[in-house]
Image 1 (cartoon, one colour):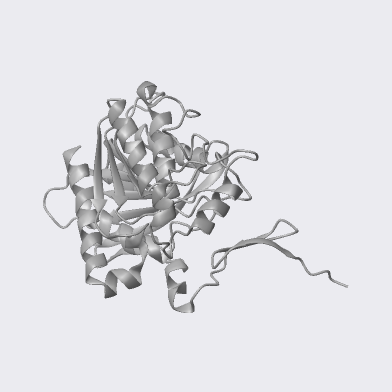
Image 2 (cartoon, rainbow, N blue to C red):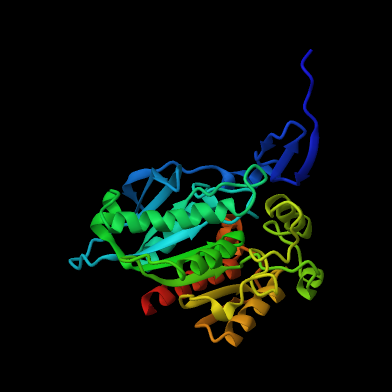
Length: 336
């Protein structure tokens, strides 16, 4: 007789964990939103001005899958393109770079910024607790260095990439990853790669104690207090709290920001985000540490609003704020 496995924990709609250690990430929320978590196949021909390919690279003693977005350049000016290294969100537990919710945004980012987007498939918790995702993200940066030194071959980057203008961008937990990778990058020789900037978008910077915004702001499809708590419980090292340096880089347990060699930072915040207050605390701590940091606020918006393709298409305000956010990212890249 086959014994049925038992559900031991779940994050509603997103994640189920069973007593045998298996994890089911099949979407179980409202069916009309399932398409946003469906994978989009790569296409090396240009569709809507962007080509997409997946590749597997060997770095750090393991294979790492990476997705690349290449904008079509029809102009006579064949200048090298900046490289955006993108780290996906999902509370370190869910989502992948080929999900439609990321595809629809990063096709636009690649076109708007005229940049090559490189997005690794980061290992996820609870199977791989932190710092696994950080290690994968930093290994992707080291792989870019290998390509720049001709130690590895990647035709799109070889022919079109400007390794002197590499930007780190991550949304939600990916924003935490962007900060951590920028911190590591500042302590090693990456030449001829130069990290020109970092863009944490709605990063999951929190503390063990609830902030005022966590208590007062509306919960959204992309972030509820239950999701926040359970994802981090599953992702952080065993025994760690939200005051861990990865989730609280402005806290006393983290390396002092003053001692970090960081690139210019554009912190993107949503006015109605549950974690807005702790994101702004990070911003103030960065300013106090004399870091080159700017903040951009999306008015009236909730956490990761731009990933919700339904709202982007149906709600004029969400559509306009998404346009404005992508424009701000483009301007930051052009400036640096």
